[in-house]
Length: 175
Length: 456
Image 1 (spheres, rainbow over the protein chains, first blue to last red):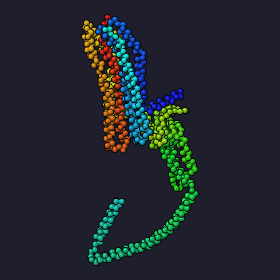
Image 2: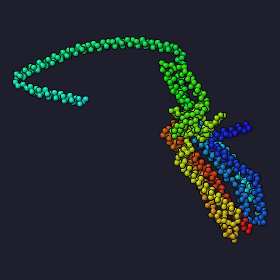
Image 3: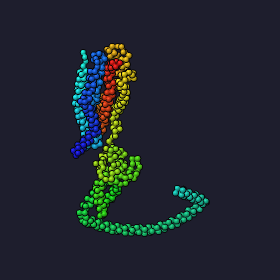
Image 4: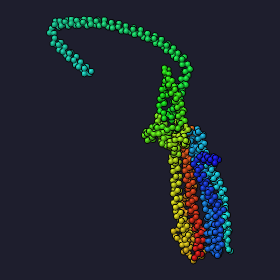
């Protein structure tokens, strides 16, 4: 319990030194990783059921050669790939936004530094240091979020592509 | 005065006239008579002269006695002056003696009084900025009197006064370690004076009714016109309400030296003032941001409506022309007998017609998301140009003049990012909706037509 309190205090101190933008980055990171985990669980869980449903519908058809059958196969693949692709755009946007948030934090911190400069005339290095940490910590946090998101996003994109390909392969046509 | 002079002149003139007429009346009728007349007047004149001379002599004697009297007075006064001078010299010697005696008797006490004077002076300087003075007014007057007394050569402070100085020193020390409530007169920002409960936190802060107070130049408590953040005001009212235990409170560490930190904190610009610092570029960015927000909300509402209609179309088997999917499906309905390839072409054509209405505004949103940070950069660069112009004019000696320009330059960057970030997010959401509809139109409409045909 004591260790937990210490950890919580450390997190609080970190958040305080990073300024308000760090909270936004934390929220963005949480949101992004929620979406990423949702994708992970979908690929591991309900994706199999969706693919099986499409394959079953396809296999249950009496004929699989006509123009109509081709269009229906196309639509089946499209429906499943829509499910596979859902939220992927949002994850990509979050990855792109993370450095922007970091930049926002940097500029916000710089404004604080210059404000201290305007009040004290550059005499107080200690007060300026708080603005500098407000400038650098969000940048770092934004970078970390973006980097972690890039790796996860690459994995998810490749999985999605592979699963769509596999589905198309499963829906065989009778030549 | 003037009138009396004029009267006299008139009287003299009248007398002259009378005498002339008398002379004219006594006109000599013959030369002998004239001679007689001259003789008689001569005799009369000499008698008058004699009388005048006698008078003069009498007075001369009188004057001499007066002179003698005056000379006597002078002599006596000179004697008195000499006596006084002698006495003064004697007394001066005596004063010197006494002073010497005083110095000798004071001895080490003199050093003590020197220390007392400097301590009282220091305390007076401290009390001028001390917040404890708000609770105990009138301490500075006592110190002024004490210092005057010690600086004068003829007076010595009494034991009671020295003990009072000791007491005041200790009271200042003890009181600056206390958090106390007391009633005092507070000047509100509108100039009104009210009697209210004030909480003094040591020598650091004065708060009342959740507002921070300051000591103004005339040693009165005044409510700060601009207050610190609401968070700190809440802490202040919590502190006033608390009766025991610990309460978190925002303290000004520079309180004992006049509270410059609190003043600087209050002087820092509010969010609205920051926004105005951005200047023209800042306003442009804000305008672009508002346009983007309104556009995104409008497209979101429109696309949500279309999406709902498409969803209901997906569930029903008859095409409804109030939605894009229904219109594409109705093309198939109208061309029932046609072969697959032709139907596909016709449907693709219908989808192409639907596309602009669904995608409208999306590109503008994307452009705004890209342009906003660039506008922010533009503002930064113009701000820097202004800053460097200021350096050219005033030189780089004043960091305050430069810092103001730089912070206003950075504000536009913040504004640019504050517009870009939500716009990117909104674009992703709106684009997601549009993409889903287009996805259904592009890839599933033909399949739906085929499914419907098979079901019949």
